[in-house]
Each structure stands twice: as structure tokens, then as C-alpha cells.
Length: 163
Image (cartoon, rainbow, N blue to C red; front, side, top):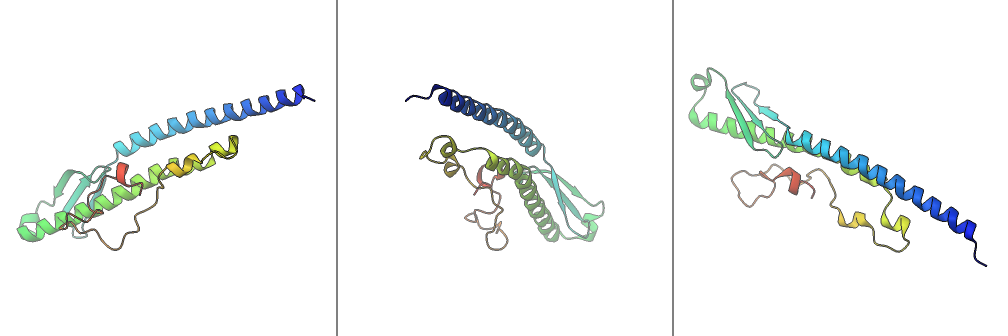
């Protein structure tokens, strides 16, 4: 026998679940937009302990400003000053990468609470299998700025940071 009341209850439950998912998706879309804006405006500085050089970078490690101590040319040689700028830029780039990951990580973590396709349609593939994981870089050691094949150096965080 066909149970119309049971079917109506099931349809109502499914509609409530879909409405809840859409509301969560809308909220997370707004959160993602806010996080993207925050990352786009991110500025991080790196400096050495001697205060000789400070380098400011954007979220992908692009140098946007360099500050030299007023007496930098008296206290240092051009070679030393160049190495100090490189080191300050490297530190700032690492800090920018870490901060971008922190900002975007909270958004990616929030998607774990959303129901997945198999939750609604038994046997369906999981959409999470198609999303990249956001994990901190655990590559061995420091990036080598002199090696153009070292993928850890100067990589764009927003595109490649998801690996």
C-alpha cells in the first residue's frame, strides 16, 4: 500500500535539509568573499634583527615596499645589504604564506560541516574528493631562491597553496 503521509513527511524533511544546506552555502559564500578580500589586502613585513632592512610583501609574496635604515649604507656593504634584503623578503613571504593559509583555512574547514552528496543520495560520489586539501607546506627545509626548479620558492599561495 502507498503511504502518502509518509511521503509528505519525507519530502518535507528533504526540503528542510536542502533549505538548510542552501542557507549554509550562502553564509559560507559570504565568508569566502570576505576571506578573499582579507587575503587580497594582506601586507606582511619581514626584517632582520639588526634593523637594517624591512621588506613588505603582499599575500603571494610579491614585494610592495622596502625600508632601509638611514645608516644602512654606512653599516653594511652592498653584498651584505643585498643578502639582508633577500632574507627579509624570504621571511616576509613565509609569513604571508602562513597568514594566507590561516585565513583561507578557516573557510575550507567550514566546508567539512556541510552535508555531502552521499548524505542526500546514497551511493553518489563525494564532492569532497574533488576539492584540494589545504595543508601547511611540510616540504623539507628552506626554499632555495637560487634554484628556479624549487617549487617552494615564490609560489602563489592562492593557487598553489592548496597542495
